[in-house]
Amino acid sequence: GKATKARHMSEMKALAGRLDETKAEASKSEAKLRAEHDGRDELASRLGEANDTIKSIEGERNKAKEECDRLKTSVDELRSSVDSLETEKASLADQVRKLEAESSEAKSLQSEAVVRLIDARDE
Image (tube, rainbow, N blue to C red; front, top):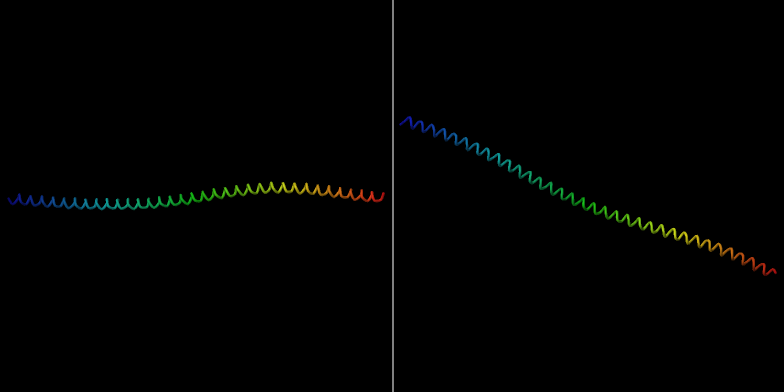
């Protein structure tokens, strides 16, 4: 009886020891899983921040592109204005030349008329 009891006790102690080992391993595994989970949460959070930053940068880039397009349009409009002013300037210069020619023709006609008047008076 005593031997059987002693054997039972030693088996119970061995089982209890194995149970403690299993519990220790389980709690180590749980800690490891929790750490991995926290690490994943941290990564997910950093990924989210990175995505927000990317969206913000893309927004800024789009604004800059729009501003660039507006400036290009303004430059084109200014070039067009300059072209039409150049055309107008050329046209005015042309008119000035014509008027100068007419004026000089009128002066020479006037001189001729004066000469004729003098000649007519002398006759």
